[in-house]
Length: 234
Image (cartoon, rainbow, N blue to C red; front, side):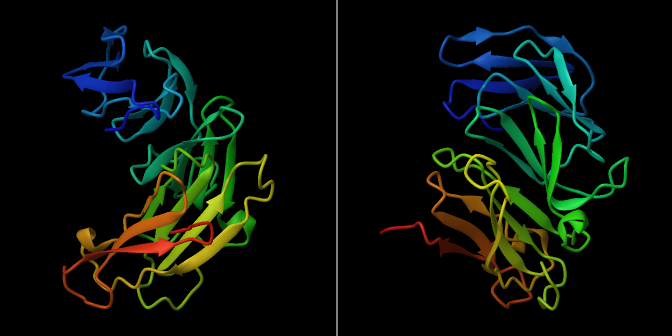
C-alpha cells in the first residue's frame, strides 16, 4: 500500500511469498514463504523496517529480508493504523487498540518499531474513556515527524468526550514530552455507512487535516472538508 517516506522501498505479497522491493536499485530482497492471509508487509517511513499484519492475528516488525525483529504487543494487528517516524529516527506504529492481552486499550496507542515499547496516549490510563467505535488514525505528515491525527465516531450526536471528535497529537518526546492531545473539532458526520466515516489524512506539512463527512446527512452523501490548523499559512 505505502512506500517508505523517500519513495524507494515497498513491501509486496505474491501468493504465499512476501518480500521487499527497492525501487531505486531495482532489487528484490529475500523472499519468505508464509501464510499472511493475503497481507503484504508495509514499509515503515525509514524503509529499513516493515510492519506485517499476519492474518489479522498479530503484528510483527521485519527487516528488508523479512527476518523477524519484533512482535508488537497488541490485541490484533489493527487495520485502522498509520506509521510515523520520530525525530530520533525510530519508526512508530500508531493504532487504536481494544483489550490487548494485558487488558491495555486506547484510542491512540503508539508502538516503537525499534524498541518494541508501547505508549497509551489516549486511553483510560491517561484519563480518557474506553475507545469508541469507528476510530481512524493518520500520521502521514512526512515533513512533520511525530504528528498524529485521530478521528472518532462513537456516538454521532457528540454527547460524550471523544464522540464525533477530530484529535491532533504531537507524539514526539523531543518536542512534546507530555504528548498533549488537542481536540480540534467535530467532523459532524451523521451517517453510519462505512464510506461516511471521516478517514482523516494529514497533509505532508502537518498543517491541514483532510476528512470526509456527511455533515448532518444520514445518507451516504459525503463531501471532503479541511481543518486548517494554527500552524497553517496560506
